[in-house]
Image 1 (cartoon, rainbow, N blue to C red):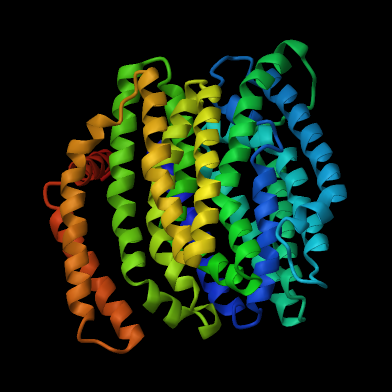
Image 2 (cartoon, rainbow, N blue to C red):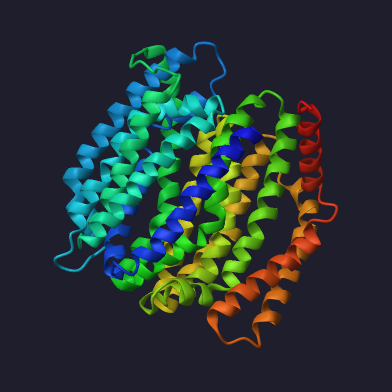
Length: 479
């Protein structure tokens, strides 16, 4: 599991690093309106990706029987058929979908949404194969394919952006990158998934997948409803700045979350029949995630104004306000994702569904009120409060019903909490006498990170385990 996570993390570091750099360069070629238009298409695509494959990839991953090839074949048929059907419906309904965002007259949003939506067909074609790769923790293969596809996507982005294609450059890059990745996975994967149909297998797959599919849809509504609210009640240019701020807020957690999901589901699946070991693995994983990502998010929140000023043109300055709150929300979402992955492995898709439903029902009116009364600040505060006051208690109750508890995590958070307080004090004090944004960013970030590490690293259980693992590896190495 550690090796799988390591490969996933390497892939995410490479992709996210290139994404940060390309975003910084592309904002000088594209306008906020281009990002606002693409944010509509990206929101629709992410929403569709949540349910286009009936969650069969997760079903294949958690299946521990010897008949996995038969299960995967039926799952592949379900996933591809569902994704093609959904793409057809979205293609026809694109004008109505785009009207929810109320873009300005003449916007190419409808056509861009149709192009971006084709990614769901590509995703559905390899859903079962991806589930097998996750099941075997074979992330080295998947990461190598994704990096090639990502390189093709970035090349497409810049080629079309220089040609003046605007939002089309972002949409085309996403689809081409997905297609290249999928083709390489199908060619290189040792698992040859054959499309087949078994009524005995299809029933359990659907009963597990449909609630999880609806929950995934609600999760995308939770993640992306803010785009709808900002676009509709503020402006398209503000939505473009918000889109950039949202991406920046996800810088720390996106490095961890994608790698975590693939490794966590595969690893937890192997422990699903031993609740004691599963509880211990869950507690250790959650503590490590919070310890690593909390200081990253806190630094982004404290340095939000300097980050936007240094990295982006002045027309994106409005995003700094939202960034302060989005950074904190990103850590909440990461912890929630790990908890939901645990419930997925335990087969509790209904529990996941109702938690997501309550969260979304509370979130939408809160964001509407926040946007109409306090603009971007209101949107950010609404998301943070609903996550802490509504979603977290519901999730804790669902885990407790399965014998999984969040309470054992609390004692381990003392040191990270003190570290975060030290980080805040060091960052603020160092930045006070400085005026130049780049200097404030570098000096404040370095001081804050140093203060946090000075508190957290000495005597850290995670560090001790890493040292023990390293010693054992060296001890087994040939002389």
